[in-house]
Length: 453
Image 1 (cartoon, rainbow, N blue to C red):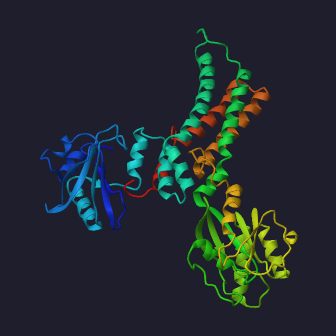
Image 2 (tube, rainbow, N blue to C red; image 1 turned 180 degrees about the vertical axis):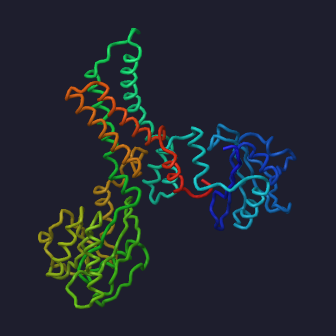
Image 3 (cartoon, rainbow, N blue to C red; image 1 turned 90 degrees about the vertical axis):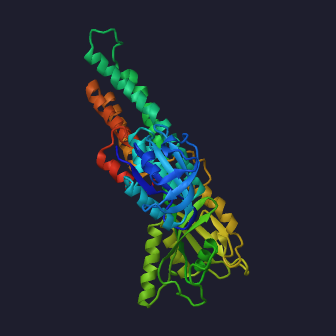
């Protein structure tokens, strides 16, 4: 990692501020060929972590911008190396020309996630923290951002370390007795560690139990709007989205395919899918839409069954209800509350019925607390929630290894056989935090990142 890397870290769109970032030994000398502080001294002599005003020039020496530069000396930087950031006006043309000048001065283009990868390799963060950086960038809700920020701050690592430490103590005691039999070391009795194994397993299982909430935080709740034609599904989608996302007409069968839109209801993000009205039809295209509606219900986390409360339930309503009840969670939205109601709520086989009027927005505010209770929205998201599939898989392997270790202990296996499973659990936890992660896994993780981060 002796080379200097450079990238635009603020994207390639018009903005008030744009940042050019460099990292690596000698980056101040490279940047100093492009940026000259107004005080007349070289950038390499600038005070640590202090913004200085200066002039940015292109590869031909022309003045591009009056901007600010900051030189941060390693190891106290983001990457653990010397870094420079040039904070310019956010013209894409200025940033592109400035970056070309940095390349001409000796920097090379940074690869995706390379700044954060260097931070990981230089010990500035573990792998859970590094992965949380991209989660924070991609966060679509305040809860998701709060959880990612907690993980960037090391919340997940602080939970893992005591477990890893206890398993390390167990293994080191056994090997110390085995390797140094003449030393004054307490006898190793595997049964004395039975409580340790059970406690470690329990702590990991508690962390693993957050994976469901983490999946909701990461990608939102897949929610299918179901009902017969003309009950107000598309109007509801538009009301929740805040703009006319779906076409609404009085003609039944207007919606013939699924229409998806992410919406935030309270603190819960829904991946809301409007579907064709469920009914018997001889129209081939509409029939395909009805089948897709049923498939959407089966693949959803939540079904929102919409019915017209001003009309008696009929066979088409019953068919739509049956489809909705195939989803893991289902809510009935009793629509058209602005009209006289004839539907008996007792005839609706749903634990939760929310009266609404999609046309006026009446009752929609009652949907937020229902969803937050159902999907954990609004719960403290301090970094302890697992949102990463790789982390969930590694922690699952660690739990299974500890279960096998305890089974072997109860069965009277020799300590070395039991400790094989304990070491397997440690290896899985090492992959989770980055202690023992393979190079190909590391490369795959940082490929998710954007250039400049």
